[in-house]
Length: 312
Image (cartoon, rainbow, N blue to C red; front, side):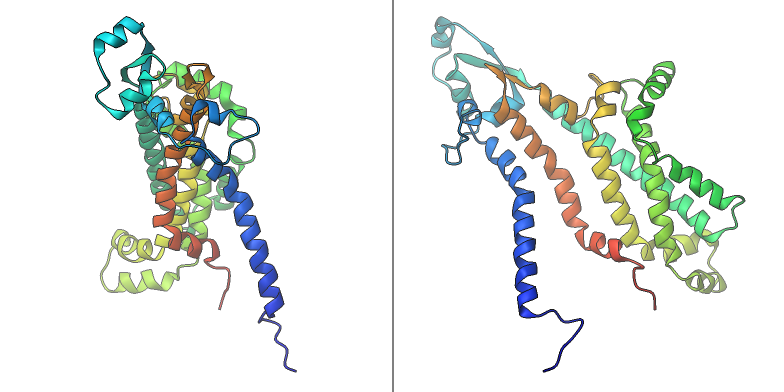
C-alpha cells in the first residue's frame, strides 16, 4: 500500500474540516449576535434568558440615526398620525424625532482619519522601505531597530506626553492630529512589512529598466510598485484595522469635532438607559467599510502573508 507524506488521508481531511468549521462558528458567533441584536427591540435585547427568536424591528437603527424628545399626549394628538415608518416607531414611546444624531458625523470622522492615516502610513512606509532595501543607508540596522522599537510598548503608554504635545500645538480634537498620530504608530509596522516584500523583488528588474533608459524614480514607479502591490495591499489592511478600531487615543484626544465612532457608540442612551439595539446597529455599520476593504483585497492579503515563504 502506497503512502504519501504530503497528501493527507481522508480521515485527516475530515478531522481538519470539522476543526475549521467549528472554529469558524465559534469565531463568527459574537458577530452574528451583534448583528441580530441590532434588529431587536430594547426589551428583547436585555431579555433573560436571551432571545434567539424574536420579531425583528428597525427601532435600533432609527434610534441610532435620530435624536428624540418626549412630548405630551396633547402635542402628539395635534401632530396627527405619523407620516413615515420611522416616525411611527418613535411615536410608540410618546416621542417625536427632534433631528439627526451625531453618528453620521462620527462615522465620517472615522473614514477620514482611518483611511487618511492608512494612506500616509503606506506611502511613507513604501518610500522608507525602498530606501532601506536598495541603498546603503548609514547605520541602517540601528535605524531599523529604532523604528521597530516604537512597537515594543503599547501606544497608550505614551498617552500623557502625546496629550501634552497635542495641547501645546493645538492638535487636540482635530483630524490632522489624529491622522498624524495613527500614522506615527503604524509607520514602523509599514516599514518593516514593506521592506520584507521589496527585498524579495529581484534588483535585476530595476537594473534592466535603468539600462533601458529609465530613471531611478521611473524604475521605482513602473517596476517596483507593481511587483510590491501584494505587500502594499496587505500592509494597508493591517494599518487600516488599527486606525479604524483604535479607542484609547480617540477617547483621550477627541471629544467633538474629530471624535470617531468607537468612543461615540458606547455613549448611545435610550429611554431606559443604554440603548443596546442602537449600539449593536452602530457596531454593525461600523464593521462594513473594513470588511468591504478586506474582501476587495483578500487575494492580495493571502498572497502577502505567504510571500517569500518559499525560496527557490
